[in-house]
Image (tube, rainbow, N blue to C red; front, side, top):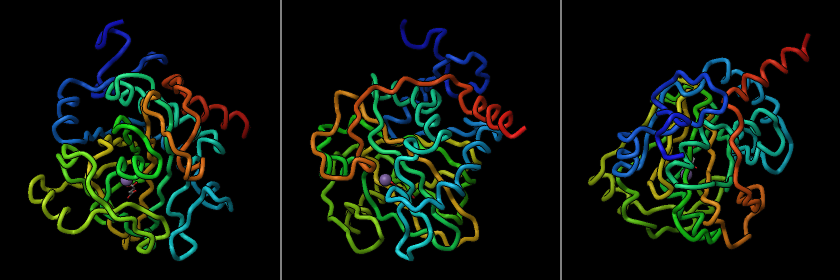
Length: 289
Ligand code: SIN
Ligand code: MN
């Protein structure tokens, strides 16, 4: 079936009734992604859907397992990796058509999950994410052949100007992989980071934005887009989930990092029905009766 016909709908259209609908980005959104490197979509998930996900966070963040990575203070959760392997709500989110569909459209084909993170950015204790490009890490550490992979992020909490929004440098994805150093000191998590001169030059050219919005908002950004986030000294937590999806042909070639950081199952994701989270809410409610 050709693109843009009845099976698919623009993400701008919130009226999705048919469970098998795969939504897609509009032409304007595709053009913005190409030129600016990012697209922000408010109101993609309802409050009821967000409640299903946020209700699982206390359990996940309390887990004593290696995937749940703490900040340098040893307590606050920096990132819960690979929650789609050990939590049903996040398993469904990892196959949600409103997240997987637009990325399949942008990457033009089937995708697998390269990485899955619930980033905590805890109130008062959430630490910095230094300036970096995600594909820089995927290329250097995982030998991913091309930047044919990307993030789609879902705001679980409101993201505001105080609680460590992502800073993006528009258009910085156009220059390919930029030289970086491997920072093992600044935070609890190793990262390939850019130097100050490079960030200053790119920000002079492209400016800077910090997308903010309610729970249920979605942010897509190119895997070469330069980004960072400041520490969260506010009293408000800022949980964001990131699906890092990769075209199946572009799977990683090196298996140096833990499997739960850089996944090795390259099976194409089959999106679930659009109401998969609401279905879980119904199941949970029935089980509680
Ligand atoms: C990331 O860049 O991978 C995470 C940034 C953040 O959650 O603040
Ligand atoms: Mn990143």
